[in-house]
Length: 428
Image (cartoon, rainbow, N blue to C red):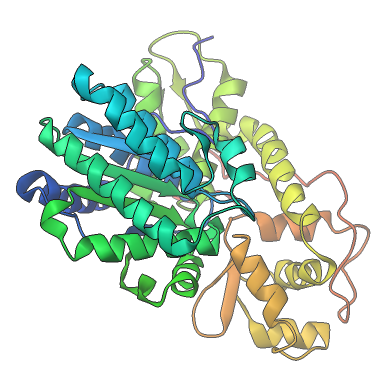
């Protein structure tokens, strides 16, 4: 059997359908490369989980490094500061790049340690991110000092890179929606101050987060609204097919047009679902050499394996929800339509729309549901509504409660016959 080229939850081998966003990032960074000045305000890509935000940022990181930039990567976590990690990663990036003359390395390390101390790092930039997060808290210095320290870090690091022949510094911040408010305030204020002398700061910060991220930034600093927000759309069918066909072609294996169409329709434009379905198909088909062809029959055979993986993810989302959040999700799942109005949910639960505002916002913050037009919401991940409908135990939940216990096992779906490639996968 050939190695499986699909890896759900990891970076795809082929990043398809993101050319427009990649061009936007290159244009953003070209300003730094050409003029040696700040790229602009914070650039943030928005979208639900599974739409490929992290993959886009990682590809942008590779591309930036290929064009002479030094990069640092930070992923935010709820209830944990991210600035200590940012300081550590930027310092490590400079050390790894080895751009400093030997005679300057000692003084540069001392300077970084001085900056790092402002963020609670006890022994310079080499401390682990976990230890840094634990140290930052009650003993952290005033925010004004941290803003100045962050300015110094970004200015001095990017200037060093530029002075040694590099293009500049790019910091990638993933999961921005989970960032601590105080830390975001420090970063945004530092960027605002550095923008006043943009010609002396060859740097850029690019982030990604859930659709709730703009509100998180504005709550941290009102001028956070000046950030550039770009929504990452679902993949078009042609791009989805390319994302599936490309990795297989590298191993000499092809997919029939009907099989690619079936997977693209089933995934509904979500890169994560494409990887799950393609991975499951490959595991069942077990292609062993070049020249083999994967058809709709193999896709159909892989559905149970894909369903098992998705069921685990859906069950985890359900388990992490509060009772009232489950009631909202149960109503949404049982309606059986792509979108549900807030009024419908409130009516089914016998509550006012205002009373459901907080749990609804929590579900949006968790990336489980998202606004879908005026007064409407929908599940972010295709199939979750079907999961709820098919696994609510025994019988549908009471209209006034909208909840129930999830049971194991799901009814298996069937794709249309291979002789009818014009139809998308059937949904029962």
